[in-house]
Each structure stands twice: as structure tokens, then as C-alpha cells.
Length: 214
Image 1 (cartoon, rainbow, N blue to C red):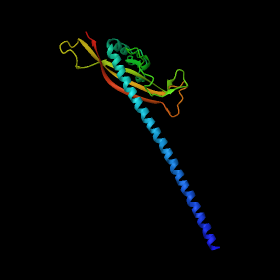
Image 2: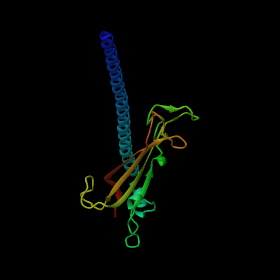
Image 3: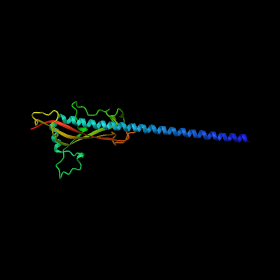
Image 4: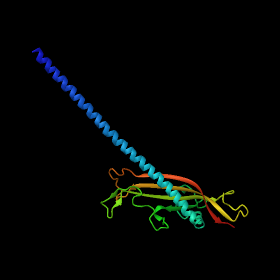
């Protein structure tokens, strides 16, 4: 009888050890899967942040290139302040004159090659086959606000050293707001493609010109 009881006790101990081992292995497996999901999400967020940062830089460079083509046309527009720049919010126009402002949106750029600014694979090669025609899952855009435009003080590299008023350069502040978001009609996040919208802002102080002087 004592041997049977000992064997039964051993079987109970063995069962307990087996259940404990299975529980531990299950926990390790769940932890591994959860860690992999967190790593994938962090990698996606890092990629999204890098894309929006690069898009903001592209927007700033595109605005500078656009204004450099015809500075004599863009600078007066900016000085007039016809647009409503968010960077000028808070300025009391009852006390101060209307601040300089010019908005350059990515949707308004026309390349000399007549192509669109962004290709279909600019923000990823995956296409949403549910749309007709198939369209990329992610849509990108940027808005550059040109503010704080003023005549450059002091000599600027490239100025005429003899006739200092032959032409002028202008200082300006370029603030570019870039955004990536799902391109679906309802802007719903797409599983395994994009979970959140990304936004990045960059600011640059530039010289624009030359513009013919007096």
C-alpha cells in the first residue's frame, strides 16, 4: 500500500511539473509575440517619422527653388500678406501692419516636365486594389508658409560690390508642415500599412533673390 501511495504522489508531482513547464513556455511565447509586435510598431513609427521629416525638407527646398525662379514676382506677394499664415497668429493687425505671408502648397506645384510632384510609389509600393484605379495606401502633402520677409541688411555674397543698389536680396522664414495620412476616402487607418497619421514641421531662414534694385 505504501508503494502505491508513493507512486501516486510521484505521478501528481510529475503532472504539476509538466503543467508548470507548459505554463512557463506559454508565457515565454506570448511575451515573444508581444515583443515582436512592439518592435514592428516602433519600426513603423520610426519609418513614419523619417518619411515626414524628409517630406518637410523636400517642401522647404521646393519652395526655395520655386521662389528662386521668379523672386521679383513672389517677394511682392509675400510682402502684401494676402494669405492667412498660421505662423502669424497672434499679431495684432490693429497695431502693426499686415505681416508678410505667402503659402506654397504641394498641390499647387507644376513641374517643368508637366509631371506631378509625387509619383504613385513615393510613399510606398503597396497599392490599394479596392480603389479604382488602384491607389497608394499613404498620401503625403506639405504646406510652406513664407513669413518675416524683409530686405537683407549688409552685404550678401553675390551682390554687386560697386553698385550696391543694383539688386537686392530678401531674408525670409520658411515654415513647412508635412503630413502623411491614409489615402482612403474616410482616412481610416489601414491594418499592417499605417496605424496613425504623421506630421512634421521644419523651419529655415533663407535668402531669396536677386531682385533688381533702384
